[in-house]
Length: 154
Image (cartoon, rainbow, N blue to C red; front, top):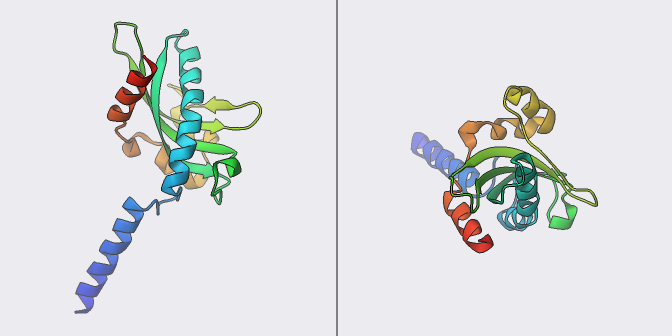
């Protein structure tokens, strides 16, 4: 009976962490959705500039915010996101999936890890509590959301 109780408690805890934002970022779903809508165009502009001005469509998933206790979009100074992006109207399918730090405010900016210095950039860009989430093994599949965003932009 004790073993069954432990298994049940572990299952509830795991379910809570996987489906209720209980991981290191602990961003409430509504806040994550609102912040994602706010930062997606900023990420698109950043990737477009890096890709010689190509039109870009992206989807983002927020995995952390700064301050960590933020509960409204107005409270968020930095959003940490996974971004999945693709070119629009180039005739060539070209895309990327990468983590990003999006600093909000009067002069918003986007910072992403670069090839060749990825690990060092992750250490520099992301706070310690979120670094594990900024590596590829936690990358979400945002393909459907990217397709919807491209359709909306095209």
